[in-house]
Length: 286
Image 1: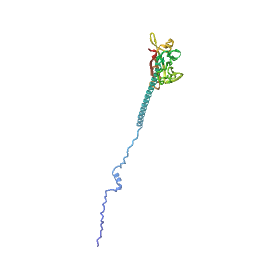
Image 2: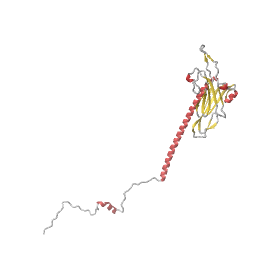
Image 3: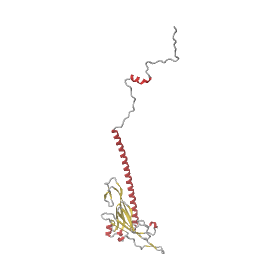
Image 4: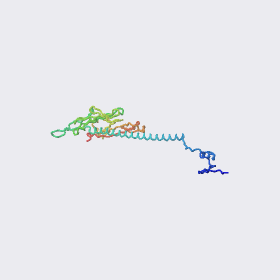
């Protein structure tokens, strides 16, 4: 009986692993071995609590308040410095203008004879108003501001650009110049030749005293006292006081200062600078 012919394949047969599960079910196989399958780990996110939010807002508000406070202090300091500087400039300018007029009060320009080349001193001393004096004034009503009046003669020895009155007008040589200083509102004004012009502003007070030469020495008198004693011709010096008031408020509104009369007065929430000077009348001292 013929034997069956067995045909063997040239490709080796793959052996099947009985214990290995299919590749597609690897995850299921591992899950079966463990009690539970681990889930994919997610990134943990955590919000801000109400207390933390309130603390952050409070800190931010404190920083903003500190910045605003610093800015306000810096601005107030800068404004106060500018206010004081402006008052100092105005006070210095006013005293300089008044001093120029007072120092030459009563001066006379002697006439020059063209032939003999000699000076004639017969010219009358320039006077102001009914007092017939080179300097005069009046006291303010109810402790108000005073008025100061002076008279002089324009010198021929000065160039035309320097022969000017207190309002800046040119004056011919040998012409009598008159000037009156007074307070109008909050401005110190000078009147000359029918023209009035403000010199400075922010003036709170303007006081004038007169040094009068007497047999017993020099007395400090008010305009009323000098007028009563008829001593305008004996005035040798004039004391001028200006009280200037600033525009910017001060950090201490209840503070006080010494005014022109030496009285402690309230600042009213503003800076006050008091300027005082004594001007000798050169024509009265010899």
